[in-house]
Length: 182
Length: 208
Image (cartoon, rainbow over all chains, first blue to last red; front, side, top):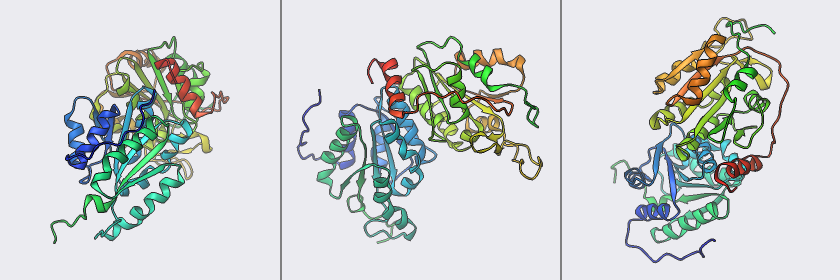
């Protein structure tokens, strides 16, 4: 009973608003996040709708058992985090494999493309490797016009295909954080 | 069996059995790895039990995700002090949502039971060179996180009210139960995580 994958028409919406539309299309009910500039606009859209429960976490690790509990109760969820938070999740990232439940996470990358902060590089560069090591499928987006189709495909792989899937929103897409400097 | 140096007299197995007595389709139970898992299984394995064999630090988050997804069911998380210490922040996250259908019971024997009964941080200070903790009070932490209804149970005379609160009181309810250190039989549920998840969903939702 799965619809054939569609190739969404190019949209004039901001890419973060396009992600919000994908969440609604896939009936996502619980959204977990830590405060994040990259995801900020998306988080606010999720907070404002009545159709989703949006939770701020104390650490990214909490998002995985929350997703497991939501799935046990019949609801779909998504974890929004930064690459610097991925390291906090590694042990519990084994849960989707052990319990075999669908898991979707969107990761805004730091330490990736012109990053000014040297402290962001180790986890930013390690992010794809540790996720791969834990059996998470990786999708990656560098340009705004690929965002919607990629997040949609990731949600299908997760919720229809039963996989753990991470979408890396590359720093090239998000823009280089400069703290007001030119 | 000697009581804890803290003076605990409650035994976890009969206590958990009472917590789960006559559990019906409206009670969803998650147990942390190790002793809490064996405890709920000794009370009678059932599809609406989700006993964890690993994933230390996960039970409270799982309970919260489940409680939000199933607001008309009662969700009960049973775990130990070692597991709770690993995810203190999850109590603050529970407090942001204030789920009325969630109860958390921490069976605090002040030991890491699965690794040889080393002292956890809830053990008293100055308890000897190998057995000292910090006297950490998990109920006080829960209150500090914003879960107002968080109390400690020590006496057998308090157990009837504990059972009533855990099963029916408006949540979130947090109960720290001081229990004895005991050597108990391992009573094991199925181990396969996918099977445990599928039977839970089948019983709750009618499909895996």
